Image (cartoon, rainbow, N blue to C red):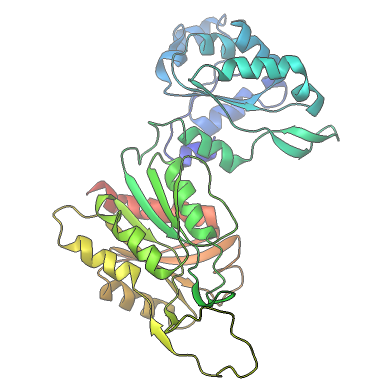
Length: 379
């Protein structure tokens, strides 16, 4: 609920009697900022909500966790508590997040019920994951991870503060070949760029990632354009940036490439100890130059991975490439930069006060989009 609200959603809650054995309605009320529906036969609740008010109010219905019992009752069309009654009257998209013992999940009846619900286009499913379950069994049945749940809600469409916005992001390294088995590159894993993509998608944006060669695959509902070299990344970006509302250049693009690529593997014996290099294309500068003359241009956000004079170098890059924001990142610090799951950055605007952000890369991505959204709203 916190993550959905942070992504811009307004959340209201209905609870089954079983749910109230695990989490109190008072807690859910505090988190959502709204009264919780638990009983249509409670005259005070009926007066507050109105009959079937939630089913008319909601844009999407998220059932999390969706137990075996609840899935069966939903399929059967039973309406005997606040959740099933509201859901039976709801006409929009429904996201099921199954969670149960692995034997219950594998049961043929459960699988039949899930399959029947998913045969309706308005029903979607996220999870369950596999691993150690609460009762000690190991297997499928774990509730989907928090990020997966939020991304899946965004994937229902039409929700979030960035609905209607097109976001283009570069992520990961590039590789510049020396010969068929060697290349110049850097340690980027693409985690920061992919976190930005997931966060933008969770806020309802249409997201395209121009992704260098990394192991981690992005979530569903994100368009991925795979590239290897700086040349390929530049071509992919320039073909799309003019149609974007926001361009975030988070990729670690190689600054140099070999002047000559050998067609066969270079042997150590007799090879030259010198390597001639030439500069690669500056993807961000070219993209900025392309859109600056346009009557309608995207908000431009760059990254500056530095090891000294971080803000000084970042501001120089911001001015040189005519950006709206630059994210300054001291990659020499522990827990920041390449390959980590955390980051610490300073978001520097072209005009205004810099903003610091730290935490997981998803946390940092959320803060970056919070800051950038102010400029994006004015475009």
